[in-house]
Image: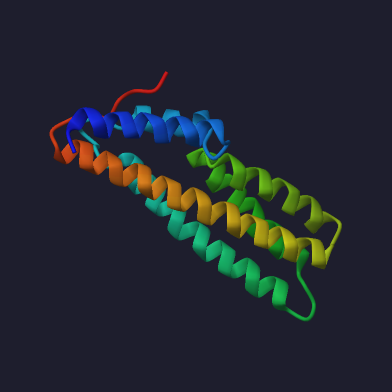
Length: 151
């Protein structure tokens, strides 16, 4: 595929990620920090987000499986996940974490378990879509092109 086609696919995918609420302006700001001196910046930040989020989701699953749930511990993990999703612009994950934190305050075990499933679902969607976007960026760069700037 030629560079122009790859760039057009990149623009379409990026636009859909914003219009469907997966990403917000924070992701745009991350992209603006990437330059020739740090060409893998967004990829590295996204990779850290994926790794950290998977650990936090595992911790949350274990904490909610306990006989007696430490809702402060659960809330601390959700708060951390909310922060990291906010920092990469993963809007739908962040929004699900906000609802999750409210259920932690209410000490609602069933609500927290349902919310954990929702957060996991949103995380797996954004991870898959971001991986596709980052893969497309690598293809564009390998073909000698540059990443288009979004308005």
